[in-house]
Image 1 (cartoon, rainbow, N blue to C red):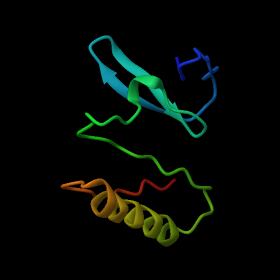
Image 2 (cartoon, rainbow, N blue to C red):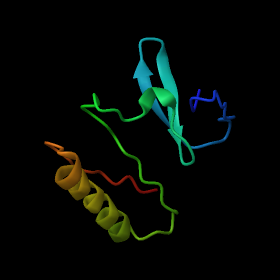
Image 3 (tube, rainbow, N blue to C red):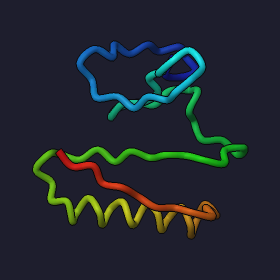
Image 4 (tube, rainbow, N blue to C red):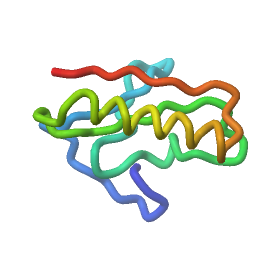
Length: 89
């Protein structure tokens, strides 16, 4: 389920973000939506963010945006730690 209204998204052929559960890997996000189970709440203590970019986007540009996001997490969300890794094709 991808939202409170019970919307279902066909995940075939989509780039996905998955989380490991006791039952195996569970899709929890894509470039359009993330799942209700992984929404950030006041009780959230750990998170991962995924920045999707076109394959021809310069890596330095992606690194700059990722670094800025890490800064925002620290400055405005009270993150104790924030960092990033760029995975380029």
